[in-house]
Image (tube, rainbow over all chains, first blue to last red; front, side):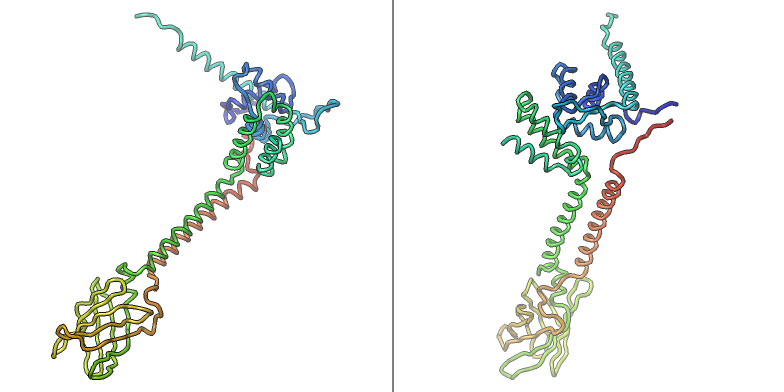
Amino acid sequence: MTEDLSPFLPLSPAALHILLSLAGEDRHGYGIMQEVARQSDGQYKLGPGTLYDNLQKLMTQGIVRESERKRVEGDDPRRRYYRLTPLGRSILAAEVERLEGVVREARLHLRPRRAT
Amino acid sequence: MMRLLYQWLLWLHPPRFRREFAGEMLWIFESSADSEGTARLLSDAVASLARQWFLRSGSWKIGVALAGAALQVGLGSVGMLFATRPGGDSTLAATFKGTWSGRVESKAGVMPVELVFGRERGAWLGVFSAADRTSSIRDFQALREAVAFRVPAEEGDLVFRGHLASGKLRGTVERSGAGIGIWEVTRPTTSAAAGVLDTKRLVGLAAVTAAGICVAVVLLTLWARRFMSGRMGSLRVKK
């Protein structure tokens, strides 16, 4: 069974960061925002509008779904948790692989040239 | 206060998005307003509002259709004004073309007359008919509501000068530079000649309006079909 993931790639920076933040564990929206800020050392900050716009698309495409994680006592009822689907995990892996290729290529070309 | 403003911005989002995410977004605002800054969160909500309505909901197509319709109405109104404006050559033709009947009053008495104006290959033609004579009209000149023409006669050409007012052509008659009377004619087939529409222009306007409506309908149909089918792209996973 092979999946053609090319229609989903490349991911937008926001989608990539959201998927990365969900790769480790299920998170709620605010948790995703905080994790994205942490991953990028505060250089990339998602606003709620951007976050939910991307989450809506990712959920419609079956890349992310709402998690049935049990609510902890004291949790705000408005909080919902999101989880990466197997398809989402495959897409994230494919994107990381693509980015590795980009980095490899960049390193090759940015290597200091020998004087001729 | 800021919370209320944020809540209001969320309420303005498309219903589908609002139902699904507004609660969480408000919760994030409450949880992170201090750390993230209310100004940043508010600007994010404004950007989200624009994005959801114009990029995601397909409402921009309705906007385009409405703008197109407004443009059509605007152009149509301008066109109608232009088409009915006296002074354009074809409008002028519509104003004077046809049969006019009335009278010439002079010292000799009142004489019933009939004037027929026409236009052929860009030149004015006309016939003057009275009880005792029929003659062609020469040197017809018309500018807006003013009109002048000459009727050849053995005893000396008659020069008619006049203007159109309230559907009537009236003015003075001269012979050899001397006034001999007044004239007044009406055209029973039309009431206010100055407001007569140019048929060709009207048909053109109707065609443009119809085309605009068709474009609007196509756009709305495309939007409706996409909206009804769930709007979002389907999965393209080959197995």
